[in-house]
Length: 379
Image (cartoon, rainbow, N blue to C red; front, side, top):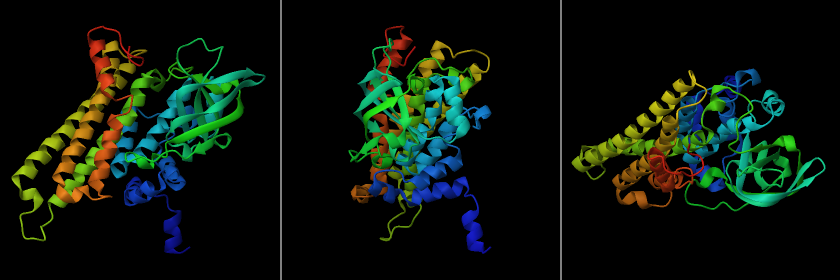
């Protein structure tokens, strides 16, 4: 065996995988999705098995552990972090019958699920289950998925929450609709389904009580869904700040002081770094506190639940603002097409505009603190 062959066969480390993602960011932008070999790298990192119980071959990691992994990936490339964040799907699917969950993840704990759930489309009750047809937007990560889920409305679902129908990825058509400036490489195309019959046991109600009582399945699901997205903004902010720090230590070709020697750069960089570090610390401290609470209780307290949602919204907002400050420090060259600081800023801002993290979620948190009515997803 040659040394080159041995190197190819040796599993790559996390450091090597992240460096490869960072180096290929422009390739991802051009493709508008994360390629399959990178999805395989995510499996090596344990992204998809992170929340799967050990009895099914998973790693049973905590929310904070998973979010730290996603932040690392997002620092290398925000779109890659966004796609990897859907490793959280192993918790969504915990509302399936136990035997179905066991079949999916016991057969492959690295199963990749992607879904486009809104708006729910009408489905017909037929022999064998539900006949599903329709087209759904925002199918993030569908290009590398094994299973696809879509939101449906059916007569025998008496809840106000959407029913999600799961089918093999081969049963769906991906309609090329994703052409954005932010999170461009997430491949969030439309998902189209034509007359696919989905067995009832392959459906679940998003937000319903899980069929298993592992701690991760008792953790508030909508809070976790918002958190895994919010850390993508923190990752993009960190990438922007790292870029400013690296370039700020380089001597100017004109003989002017290094950027990092200029007082205004020092001040603004410190403000942005403090903004990022403060949001990051509050975020992980809150997640860890909730996880500790679940070690001694069946559910987190109402106050903890509200704070879990609040810190996700705050992390997204502060990450976006820190990335914007870094962009401003980049000067006139940062406005060039393809400049990394522009991508970091727009990606972070795009995260903060997601429905789970937008301005309305802060209103909901405030309402909860005053015991006023809140939007779905808040206690």
